Length: 113
Image (cartoon, rainbow, N blue to C red; front, top):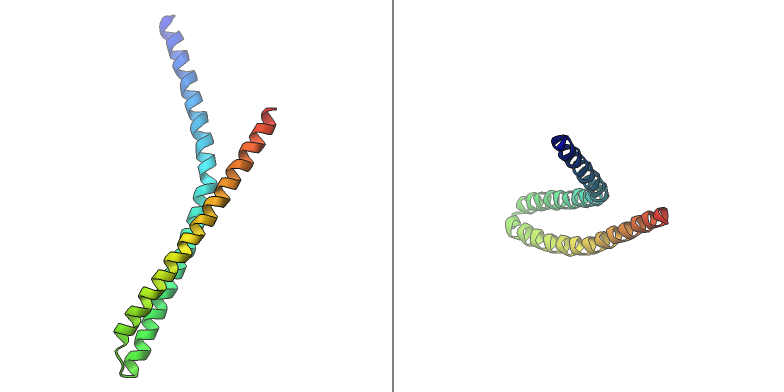
């Protein structure tokens, strides 16, 4: 009887842990979706920069100028701009995630009352 009693208590704890983990996964899922979307956008920006660099390099090479140096300078400038944009977007994203968390907490609090 003692074995079944301890087994039952363990199962209850396991259920509680599963419920907590499910709640945590759901909360983080929205955050992950937003972060993944921003990473995809950032990847598109970087791909666009690389395309622009190769096009610029080809055009400058055809005109007998040193396209590599100019393309390299362009790439560095674009990456600096991208870094600035990424920092601003991260601030906006973090603010949006915080607002969503507060909204969810408010909804949960109102349901508990």
